[in-house]
Amino acid sequence: MAAQNRVLIQGGRVVNDDHSFDADVYVEDGVISQIGKNLQLPGGFKVIDAKEKLVIPGGIDTHTHMQMPFMGTVAVDDFYTGTKAALAGGTTMILDFIIPRRGQSLLEAYDQWKAWAEPKVCCDYSFHMAVTWWNDKVGEEMETMVKERGVNSFKMFMAYKDVMMLNDAEMYQVFCRCKEIGGLAQVHAENGDLIDECSKKLIALGITGPEGHAMCRPEEVEGEATNRAVTIANRAGCPLYVVHVMSRAAGDVVSAARKEGKVVFGEPIAAGLGVDGTNYWDKDWRHAAAYVLGPPLRPDTSTPGYLMDLLANGDLTCVGTDNCTFNANQKALGKDDFRKIPNGVNGVEDRMSIVWEKGVHSGKLDENKFVAVTSTNAAKVFNLYPRKGRIAVGSDADIVVWDPQATRKISASTHHQAVDFNIFEGQVCHGVAVYVLSQGKVVVEDGGHVKVTQGAGKYIPRKPFSDYVYKRIKVRDGLNQPKAVEREPYKGPVIDLNAEP
Ligand SMILES: C[C@@H](CNC(N)=O)C(=O)O
Ligand SMILES: [Zn+2]
Ligand SMILES: [Zn+2]
Ligand SMILES: [Zn+2]
Image (cartoon, rainbow, N blue to C red; front, side, top):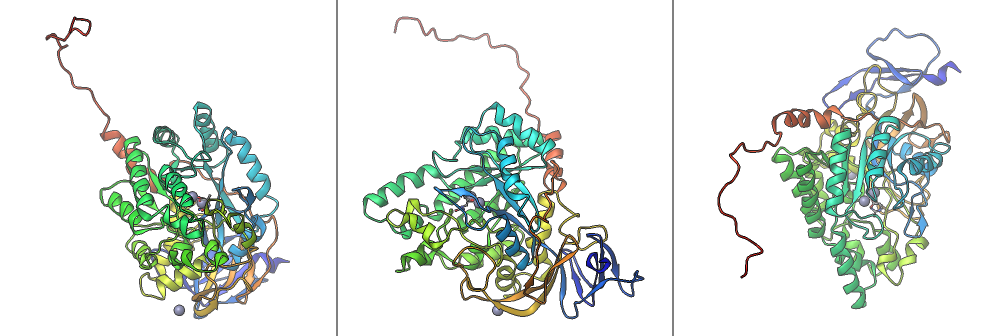
């Protein structure tokens, strides 16, 4: 029994976001206990041979929607299949979203999502909270979420009009509230009014296929909303995290904001790094519909490479997936009207290999930047570091033995996800998770044998005011308090509005 929770990972090269070094890693009772060479160890441990392999922090997927009720149906990958697939691909923690119905208490929604996740998750997890409506009660509950439920991030939708969309004034108030309680404001940045108007026009023209989904929300619709969110957040003095950055236009807005010193983070997703929007024009309806998500993939085939370049230079920060999967027959709900195609795609299992293949194997990222964008940056942004996101003594033993030379061919016929297709079908990627430890237990071995335990995952609460996010803001708040001008009261002439014209 002792061997199960004592593991020695021998002969590997440890890769953190800031440096790489050759060392053995010893794990005991779920945490990293020793790192170095010629370790003095107690007997009775399992040995993993990591020669010529990398030993990296388990991936953290910043953006998933397991079993999300959406557009009249429910995402088919649930907290079990979704987290099993995550572990299979080298991701050892997911950050999922609680999405209250309009008018629903945030606390009630939290209990609902927690009840869905707890019995099923195979890896550690945490939640963002969506703010889909706004009043003082929501503001009070946001504080409870931060102080008592360990949620420190709040997502607003600028799209999905009449379902989850907030207007600018509401967003400004939620941003101000986030700032007060030390939360990180997140946005789904698309102009929902323009999407609504343009999609009606396309349907009237008889354009009902998935190409209409892309045509009604071109990248300028994402770029405009991203810029608006950056402005509103800046006026509120609130840090901003733009989820699923899908285009050059939005990526450029995030780059410019960061160059101006604004506290803004951008999150590309595996889909946007691995495929493009030309798929929407495929003659096969089921193929085209499979790629429908919002914001859409871009027909500009240079987009995946451009987003990877922005990750490489630090303008974009964390790679998520927005994993929100619907089977082909669920996508077919929109066979006569693209507005009814459930939005969402897969990614949670293939994210790490896609980033390795498109980033490291292409020479755009080095191994340390790979660790940063797939794990460490997320831990820092969402206040999980260094418990998560680092190979260090005392950190959680969420560890991946990564084979940079091995390749894997992505296919729905072999993936662990529940969804019956894969948007990366047929892609061959360098970079394979040959061993994965979750909470110090081996859950993937020999590159494919997945042995997870349903419900073993733990909810990880997160404190507000993450240093990585708020240190600069705190200093600025001390400097830039608005002040009135001291002046004598005005005693000059004023027109009389009641006087005869
Ligand atoms: C509803 C959720 C997933 N669907 C999607 N991105 O198309 C999101 O917008 O992030
Ligand atoms: Zn979204
Ligand atoms: Zn999402
Ligand atoms: Zn390759």
